[in-house]
Image (cartoon, rainbow, N blue to C red):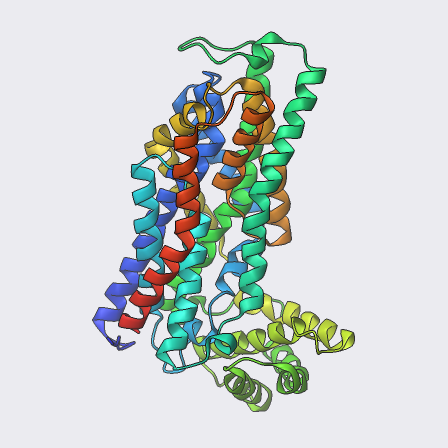
Length: 450
């Protein structure tokens, strides 16, 4: 295996490369995910492509700014604490290279073939692969070295949301058809001809909703990844939240209360590391630890508390106390400056402008045996926006691509249009292969580099 000296020029260059890669990945995310938001308005000629993607980019920016960061760090918490903050101080170059290299390669390959693949699945599969690779590096048992409760929580959201999108869009299409007697809503668009003004207004509104909800959920995913990278490059400046209301003394008090909980209930292989971090935090007088070391200790404590909160053997009062302590500690290490949010939104918007055409064509003409109608586009986008926004504010990462694509398929079934089996097979194969491929590749790359 390779080794990166934390003080070497190689490590710094690698970290800077990772910063570029995360921006490129979010740019590629725009190819896939944000293109779903503008597909209907562009395909139906409701808005010109340039106007649509600029408007979508602005709504994404607003969604990122107002959407919080709970999804961003729900993904970060899939990683073992020693990967986030290695005891040697070694910047997490292997983790970042494995993550961005794997996710970006798979994203670009599926985009090239015009398949609506999920960037969320790419990232999550890579994160799980790194967690598994870390277990092999340290010769740990997989059952006790990977936070499977957090992984299953994320995977459940990814699995259920497309089904809800399919059923919800199908039912909404039936409702629209029974209430709205406007023929233009159920006719495929004519090239270069703008739709009825009312239809156009409806589709612009649904595009706005999807774009905003996409920013509030998918836009957050890169925020956590950007933060991991800049913390590796400049740990003294970004390891801790300068605006956190939690004092060093409060951190120590919380760590002291966490000790009996983690000692009794934590079942994972890094329990010893969590206890050692708690002891350092609770016994040190004065802010002696460097910011990066303090961040590492806080993440170890958070990992232990998360295990307690998920342990069915723990009492209700102990689980509530663990959740309360974790909520007090998180703001010290889980944050994002305004410029990081802006960078994420800009990368999404620029990617949409460059690569939207392939995905727009697939959604408009490839999923059903007939072309997409305004009513079908509106139904799938309204349901998709509601699901994505709800998940964004509850801290669950979902896939815009999967929800919108499933919604379009649901409306095609509702309209009796039928499904394009060839395209559906391609999409399903991409969905089924993304997780196992990214898990295996990221695990192998991380093992070689760690």
